[in-house]
Length: 219
Image (cartoon, rainbow, N blue to C red; front, top):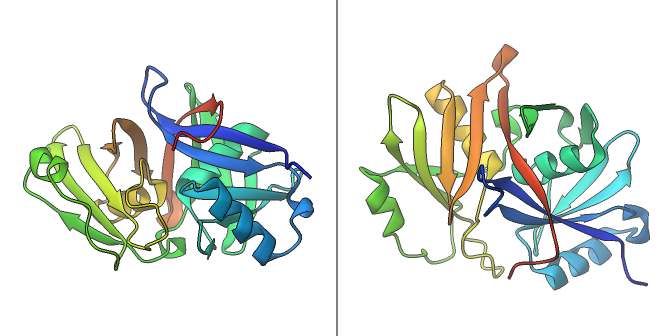
């Protein structure tokens, strides 16, 4: 059976370029167990693949090529855009979603994010020059481009050894950074993807950006 997969680019720039490619399986029940879902995620080779288990309730299941994730940023922004829902259901809890000014936003909590090391550098040029590190910890390298304006340059290195050496755009890490700094940020990550993050109410953080349909994997 050929699965019904939608490919999206999440966190595009204002011109609709860049963005991290996401695979969304509309009929998640066609892959009834973790083993079959991991096998498809490995075959697609994307940073993350989402399986929709209930499109009306927004129940989703997220996988990297090697693991199941309880929460992730860019897949949820992509699914919220695709389904047009105001709430998504995850193992960690309910995630609120909204659209505004051409962007899709989700509201989540920093404690839901799997471990990330946030490593600050002195300049955007230093971040640009970084080599891909050896597998190990998940590292988010960042530097101010304009601290007053809240503009950040970042790169994400998952360090899992699963073929994804660098993430083009990482909503969860941007969420952590905005939570730590306590302020609104506009993050340019990877080749030019753009992520927005800002503190929300009651200890939450909003992350958002533009989403575009894609023809298929860009790898």
